[in-house]
Length: 111
Length: 114
Image (cartoon, rainbow over all chains, first blue to last red; front, side, top):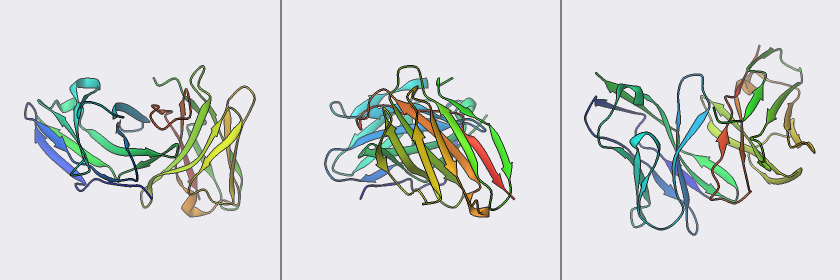
C-alpha cells in the first residue's frame, strides 16, 4: 500500500526567506508525486508533479520540488517566500489512479 | 478557476437523510474522482469513474454510491447520513485515467449533518 507523510503540521517562515515543506512517501514501483495547495474555502490547486526525469521539478508560482529516490522524499521549496504563499500544502502520490495525500502542512509566511 | 463545478457549495441536513452531490468535470475530461476531507481522516479517495464506468474504489462506505452519466457529469449519493459524514467533499477530473495525469479539483461541497 502507498503512503505519504508530511512530518510538519506547520512551517513558519519570514517573507523573503527560502521555504521548505517536507514530504516522504512509500510506494511500490515508480512513484507519481504531486504537490497541491489549498487556500481557505477553496479547492486544491495543482502546483507541480514528478513522473520521471530531472529530479528538480519546477511548478507554479515559483515553487519547485526535489525528488530524492534514495531518501524517498519529495520536498517542496521556494527561494523567496511571499505572504500570499500562506496556505495548506498537500503532498500526494498517485498509485492505481487514486491520489493518496499526506496530512497537510500549513505554511505561515510572516511579513 | 479549475473548470470543475460542484453543486451545491453547502448542504445542511439531518441524520438519517439522503443527499446528492453533483460534479461537472472540465470540458473534455473523461475521468472523475471523489474525495472526502475531514478533520480526523484528512483527504481520502472515495471512488473514480472513467467514461461512465467505475475504475477505482477507495475507502467508500456502503451507504455511499456514485455514478457518471453519459454527459460525463457525476453524482455522489450519501444515504443514512451520520454525524461523522460531515466533511468537505471534493470532485476532481482528469483527461485520462493514468496515474501521471493531473487531477483538477472543484471548490467542494461542504456537508453538515446535524
